[in-house]
Image 1 (cartoon, rainbow, N blue to C red):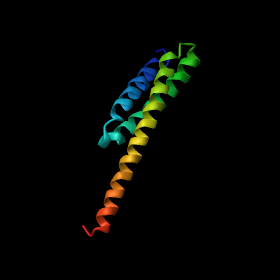
Image 2: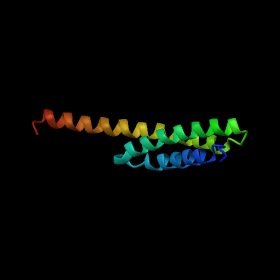
Image 3: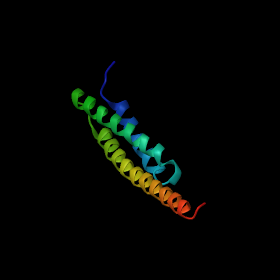
Image 4: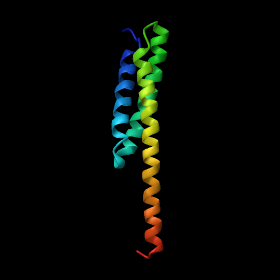
Length: 97
């Protein structure tokens, strides 16, 4: 069976798109973060396999870019949501609640 990295490239592309979409929802940013990391790994492995086989690497490159964008958006969302929860918890602690 020929391994030209197409399957991994498509998986990276799909996971990158999923990560970007899920990054906009506040409480599920951790899922977007995980999807982006897995998409990044798949896209890199797919690009390596495609390069070794002499196949086109466009899908892998698109998956890599979308996974990076999804990772950044999810990380920003996750950190800002975590910071907000910590601030509310700290304020509630100061008020004696």
